[in-house]
Amino acid sequence: MSSRSDRTRQRVIEAAIGLLTRGGRDAVTTRAVAEAAGLQPPAIYRLFGDKDGLLDAVAEHGFASFLATKHVDPDPQDPIEDLRAGWDLAVEFGLANPALYTLMYTEPARTGSAAFKTGMEILMGRMRRLAAGGWLRVDEELAAQIIHATARGAVLTWLSLPEDRRDPALFTTLRESMVAAVTHERPAVRDAGPAGAARALRATLPEQTALSEAEQRLLGEWLKRLADGD
Image (tube, rainbow, N blue to C red; front, side, top):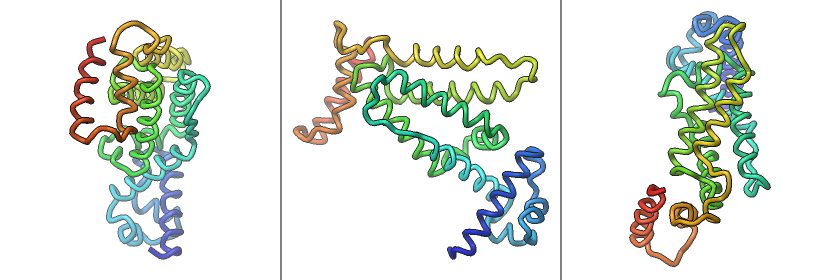
């Protein structure tokens, strides 16, 4: 795609976001977007196919913008505080971009975007580090789902409430409930019992080269059974 087309495409996306922010999803019509971008309506169809294609592009822009705010610390001094900070960042983005966030997260199909997947990979990396340190109380995948669901649910619930019923305690309560649900107060590998050690070993298993693929798979199954027995 030429740079001129890229610039035009970006101008249309920004125009659509402006309309979305000011008037909600119903305000984002192809005619209104074309007018705001200084184009004729057929240009929208050439660039995005249809209105749904345009909304998908707007959501992808939102996921990319959120991804750009993320800071990855491969070795945080306090992994639990790092988890809290990541959760808070997700909530802050949603509150700062309510209409865009609602578009991004109220339709499951939109979470198939490349930027969303990259963001989830960053989250899974954080889960692997927590597991390797013996912090995780649950499986890495489930932990990531809980973190994502509580942050998204917190934002969408807040946005759905009348202003006079919005209590900031919603966020701190949900965040701390999330922390308690997915992590131990202390690294489990320091405690008696095999579950925490199994989670820690399972998290680092892909990094070793001494075992064959089949051996890794078998050991991974055993470790999961031990970890789930906690």
